[in-house]
Image 1 (tube, one colour):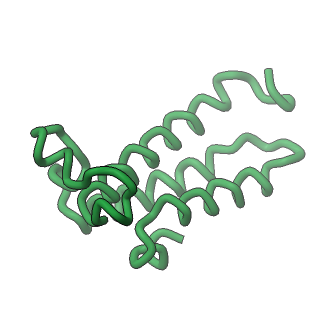
Image 2 (tube, one colour; image 1 turned 180 degrees about the horizontal axis):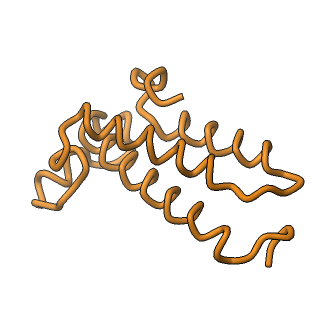
Image 3 (cartoon, helix red, strand yellow; image 1 turned 90 degrees about the vertical axis):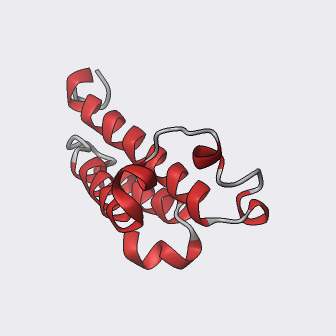
Length: 106
């Protein structure tokens, strides 16, 4: 039990954050250059890996990212740090989203 909430109450947060991070990674791989990404880009397509951009298109992947971020923030159990944790989720979403797309996620 953490901050008065059971493990089950935190599970949704972990699942939604995991989805958001994976979608953000897929988007970054698809739209950033190797210099911006800091590693080789377009690896999902090159290696035939399933990814959100291939499955849903760019617009669909952006929508799923926004939905996952909202679901993560909404799933934070009520506790003393609820608002701070939600703010941290949104800040990380902005950090992980390609700069020219930040307005669409935040």
